[in-house]
Length: 169
Ligand SMILES: Cc1cc2nc3c(=O)[nH]c(=O)nc-3n(C[C@H](O)[C@H](O)[C@H](O)COP(=O)(O)OP(=O)(O)OC[C@H]3O[C@@H](n4cnc5c(N)ncnc54)[C@H](O)[C@@H]3O)c2cc1C
Image (cartoon, rainbow, N blue to C red):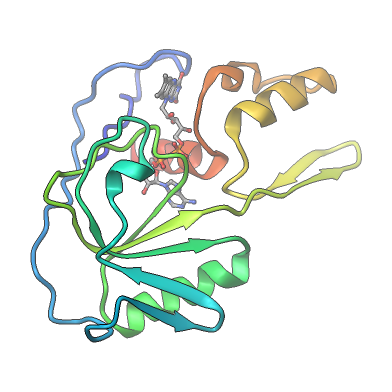
């Protein structure tokens, strides 16, 4: 389950929410076979071994059918392409600070986003990866005299997670 904040909340407050997305486990026939892992283009998809409790701030959740970590945009594209090719459901997560997973697990592939680069763009701001820590971006921008993201300095997630939650509202 994912519990986003409601749209009327000020961004610095965490509250229980109305929107709940459930990822209950059903058994998919569309898999890579029975091997414990599957490699494609340098990416390793771990099968049925990764507990979701390792992947969210609350320490809750059973295993996901597939798990892969991505460190750049091309790996993310590869991971999504393979999920589509094998008809696997997938979800991308960051720090898991806004995810509650089912103890039954997730019948699909969890893609853990480690794309955490930051580039300064002179006199404009930054270009950051979705896996970049949102709190670090808030502190860094405020320290360097840019305003607007001060509230982010206490939020324990990634930039991608924050943007996704805004889009989900
Ligand atoms: C103590 C605490 C305080 C918080 N305070 C605030 C607050 O003040 N304001 C606020 O807005 N939020 C707050 N949050 C909520 C949450 O931490 C943030 O919104 C955070 O930015 C989520 O990032 P994450 O990487 O942890 O996302 P995750 O929990 O990993 O994912 C959340 C959702 O985003 C999706 N997602 C994540 N990354 C991507 C991606 N790269 N591409 C597509 N989808 C993606 C996931 O599938 C999931 O649906 C707080 C949470 C905690 C635990």
